[in-house]
Image (tube, rainbow, N blue to C red; front, side, top):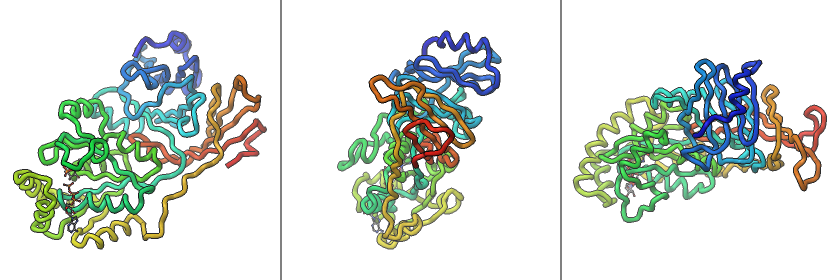
Amino acid sequence: MGEAPAFFVDELQKGYGNGFDTKSKGGETAILMGNRTYVIGGACEESPLSIGVQIFDQSTGEWIYPTVLGTKPKPCKGLSAVLLSEDRILITKNGSTPDDFAWFLEVDTQYVRQQKKILGTDVVAWSKGVRGYAEKPVVISGPSGVGKGTLISMLMKEYPSMFGFSVSHTTRAPRAMEKDGVHYHFIERSAMEKEIEDGKFLEFASVHGNLYGTSVEAVEVVADDGKRCILDIDVQGARSVRASSLEAIFIFVCPPSMEELEKRLRARGTETEEQVRKRLRNAKAEIEQGQSSGIFDHMLYNDNLEECYKSLKNLLGLDGTVTAPPKSSPKVVDLPMDHSVAKIDHRIIINSKTPELGKASTNIRIVLDVSSLKGGAPGRTRGLDIYTMDSFLDGLAGINH
Ligand SMILES: Nc1ncnc2c1ncn2[C@@H]1O[C@H](COP(=O)(O)OP(=O)(O)OP(=O)(O)O)[C@@H](O)[C@H]1O
Ligand SMILES: Nc1nc2c(ncn2[C@@H]2O[C@H](COP(=O)(O)O)[C@@H](O)[C@H]2O)c(=O)[nH]1
């Protein structure tokens, strides 16, 4: 990232009055929190197609270039910021569509604090604001060959619009029928290690001699599609997710016996003899941990496949009559090119400052209700309730919901 913008340095030297303030100029905006000013905007050097973040620490007079986690918003023609709470900033993008205008920059959430410890650097994390509510992700674990993939395929086939699969990264070689980007993102070990170092993974583990991991993005793309995310990961991975800020339901699938597990693994025919033996050796420890670690909310016993699938649907609240929740479609317009943002209690009021060139001079006011936000980085911030008004009226009367 380049030099700090001169106008911010001037402003910073003058100081801000109230400890929580914002300034905008050109494509950048600055927001003060305590001793730190977050300067957000422009393109970021290591990723020129996304918005950059730098921090001015008034106590030391130095600029800090934090590790920026999460999918970064793409650059836009200007943005505005408002402090939502002491741990996150709401960013609105000029001229953006309803699906892309609200982003959260987390500066001191549980996830950010955890990542600071792991990475040993200053950290901020982006999380995109998504309208409506989504069910918790589902983590499914169990020994290799127990039937996790089979059960997940059945669920996704019966409820294609409700569930989305988190596509993991792995260093193992693809099997004959496996497609890159569908079953896994197949990746070289050194490249995966680099991405782990860069904080791109929600969790990762060495499983049966290969690296496997869930990227933050894998979970985010499912949320962006408005679906409930399913993760098929081993017990070590489930433990890491349990310790993370991602709220999920944890399910462990047990085999009826070790003999039956071996039969299924061999019948699948995807592993060499040596790999089958390794997976069976690991299965014993996994079953023990699965049953005793306290990680899992539910145990499923996969003897009869149809019965096990029925139990899975029951515990996910699917009784065969449920359909995908309707996508909410309140009347929402594109965000004005030039707008101001203010917070009043749990409402964010976005007003257009000037009418846009070539457009009717109707001003636009958008009201976001942020009282029931859920989730956040890693993943998406859900629960943004959006109201719009086509023209300015006094007070909040006349809101369209
Ligand atoms: N209840 C069952 N009875 C008999 N066979 C089953 C049952 N459930 C799954 N299988 C079969 O067992 C084999 C292994 O299942 P699957 O590939 O779904 O396991 P998995 O837990 O996803 O394994 P991995 O962790 O290695 O990916 C498959 O051939 C599948 O058809
Ligand atoms: N910790 C993680 N474990 C994962 C992930 N993706 C898959 N897995 C687990 O690996 C084994 C072996 O899978 P296979 O496809 O080689 O048979 C299995 O138990 C999966 O649950 C991941 O992202 N993280």
